[in-house]
Length: 282
Image 1 (cartoon, rainbow, N blue to C red):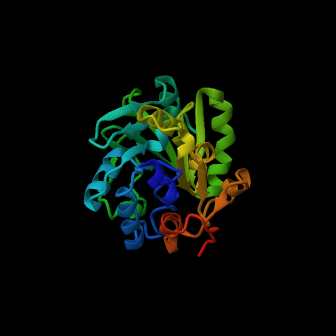
Image 2 (image 1 turned 90 degrees about the vertical axis):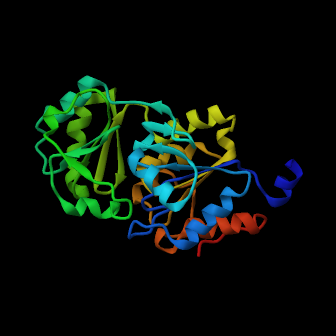
């Protein structure tokens, strides 16, 4: 088996994929070429892992509908599930932080969203927020946020235009200090996470349990919530459509094509069939 892997150029044992802006096209759907390539990859001695800010309940449905199997890192690293859906790891915001996040007047027009194991909760009814979730059918639950339990909250998200969120960042950082972590999972989405929770730390936990070294992993991403994962694997690949700030912070990582052109599939087809040749984005 080792000789076979070397002849085929298999230096990696695990591939980790962000979803939005990476695997998914701008219409938030998975292209046929990408789906075909993922199925080819699954036939190789390769472990598939999907690492996303989306909720586990949504990702479970997506993989079932696509007839794909993979480990799931969801909520930007706050949850890890195995192939059978067994939860391997969970981290929540400290109760005091969750309470302060939801009870403080942040003087912002951004809407607030809370992720818990039983779903996505918000007091802001905006059907536009559901557009990225049309293909899965996942929906928010309208709820008075101040009445949610202060325990069991994996992350809190603020959504608004990027300039509005940039104005919010200093206030949250000054209030919480190192008690929480902040990251932009998209230009219009600021996630407040348990300190130390991110896709990179979650992937390290998962790979340790699978006896796979992080150097044996490749990962694909497009936003700052992917940075730790991309920086700590053997091959981190940045999408051409990535947030400029990610490209600025990780200039040494290889940039591939745009998600609208299914660039992950394009790269993996090259890696599967011509690993000895230099890769050029389409």
